Every structure is written in structure tokens, then in C-alpha cells.
Length: 429
Image (cartoon, rainbow, N blue to C red; front, side):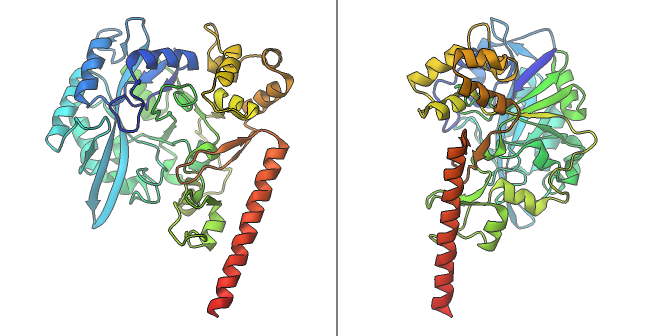
């Protein structure tokens, strides 16, 4: 059975998340999006787990998949934040945990309560080293999966510039044998991750890390599995790649941390430019937030474009709502964009049906010829995106004029900074 799975989500009990993140809303909007397998998110939170146990029943005895009354499937999932010191160095990382049963969830929570609280946030923080976390999870149930979340994000990613790790071995040490996958995150894609040899035997998965249920967030990244509908098959896919068909990505430039930059000053840079600046903002002198693109350049031991023999395919797609918003120059949640969205997405046709399968001629008839051409370019991964940085999302460039304006803006900014640097050098010489 084919699943388009988004297994990194949050509930209304996580900080900075929508208070309308409920099971009914998640199911409703997953169906609209075309996602047919969701993570539950936040299973350690005492109020959320009560709601999960009330709303979900196991699809079959010991299947490890759970469903709503209307039959929508969920997998028990949470995200844990680890902040600790190892070898006199601070470490910060987020990990996803997938569990096969409510009993296993109860045991996981019981263990975590020996190290701190779980009631203040859906994504709680602990001073537990990564190897110990994995070892404890496997002791509870061998089938439990631990996966580094958004692996390249600067602040809490496995490879993030501020996370304290330079390799997966450094993070998980002797327990690396029990870590079989990483979540690449919005700001990177498989092509970028393939540049690291150490990831050759690690499966790459993509999920949304959504903080709301809206279709430009939920399911914006997903992993496609062709597996039997049970947790054992899912675990095998994560461990061996068997049944893991492909990932659906956004253009990594759309991610909030793709480029190096400083949002307060409104500047962003490609890796070689940031290196010349010593990662210092030329406007204010503060340290730049080192982006994913630069971090991969620092750690890569292969050229861009290298593809491993066992590489899984991936698609690069920009969510429909964002394309419509850019095309019509309106905010994504406005009435106009919803009206245009509903011309394409119906009760019989999900957003992924539109993005992947709806004939381009039919899209053009429902909207117009120009937008049909944009959708064709989107399927081909040929829409350029102004890179996101320092917490700001990237912006799709839908026409030549937008791209030209962006390029001119970048060139002007670089010329201004070069002039400023030259002036400073002359002053201090």
C-alpha cells in the first residue's frame, strides 16, 4: 500500500504552534493535502496523549498503526530536544521518536519523567546524551525508531552550525548501529546530503515539522512508502530502505535557513561570500547565522551532483497555496487565494493530485494559461527561489522580471558592502 507520510508534526500543546492543531483538523487537512499517513506528534504530553488514546484505535491487533473513527491512519510520534555537554562541549539536537504501541509510549514517558518534566511543552527538553536516549528506547522496545530531526537546521540539527556535532558518529557514538535515517529538513534536499560519504547507508526522509494544519505547512515535505499498513513494515523501511520509495521536498532555498544571513539587517550570502566576511554581518558587525548551504560546503567530501548507487528518487515541489499567492500578489491566507485554490482542489482531488497528476491543460482551463505554465515548471523543479535565511522563508521567483529584480538587488547590495569594506580598510591603513 502506498502512503504519502508526514510523520513530523506537533500538537496544540507545543510552543509556537496553532491552538487549533487537533486530531480532527489534522485529519481534515491531511485529506485536503493528499497525505494519507500522519505522525501524532507530542505523545509525551499528558493532555495530548489522553486525547490520542480517546481518538485513536489500533487498525488491527498489534499492527502499531492507529486510526480515527473514519479510518485515517496515524503513527505514534514525538520530538525530543536534547541539550547537554559532552567532552566539554555544548550539544543541542532534536530527535524524532516513533513508537509501536501506547504501552511503549507510556514506558518512554515513564523514563523521561526520571529526567525531568513533560507537561510544559509538547517538545520537552532533557539533558540526555544521544547514545543514552537511543539505548533506553531500544531497551523499551526494539522496534522504536530514533531519527535526527531537521538534520541541518543551525540551532538544533545534527549537522547544524550551532549544534555541536560534525558527524552522525560524533552524535550517537556506539549507538549509531541503531540510527538508520535522518530527516533532511526544509533547507536541504537529498542532492545536498549525498555529498557526505557517511550518509551512504543512512536513509533520507522528509517531513513537514508543521506547526499548523494549513496545506502550505502540513505535508509540504513528505516521504512515500510502499509498505503493508503496520509499524513493523514502517520500521523495516526506515532501517533498510525497503519500501521507502521517494521523498517529496520543497526547493531547499524555500527553507528558513538555507542561506547564511542576518534578518535584522536584511542581508544573505552564498557560502563563498559568507566565508570572505568571516561570517560577520558587514552592516552591524554581529555574527551571521550560518545557513545549511554553507554548512554542507564545510562538511562535504563529494562534489555537488554526486549520486550514490542506492539513492532514492525525490521530487521538488512548491506548495500550491504559495504559488497562487505569488502569482496573484496576495497573502497566502486571503479569500482570493482560497477561491483560486478551490478551483483546483476539490473533495475528489487533493492538492497532491493537482501538483503531481492533474493534466496541465486542465489546470490552465481552471485558472489561466500562465499559471498552467508555472505548474508545469513546478513539476519539473524549475522554479527559482530567493533563498531563505536566519528564520525567513524563501520566496518563489515566478517570472523573469522578479528574478531580474532580485539579481539586481543582490548585485547592488554586494557592491555597497564592497565599497563599505574598502572605505574601512582605507580608514584603518
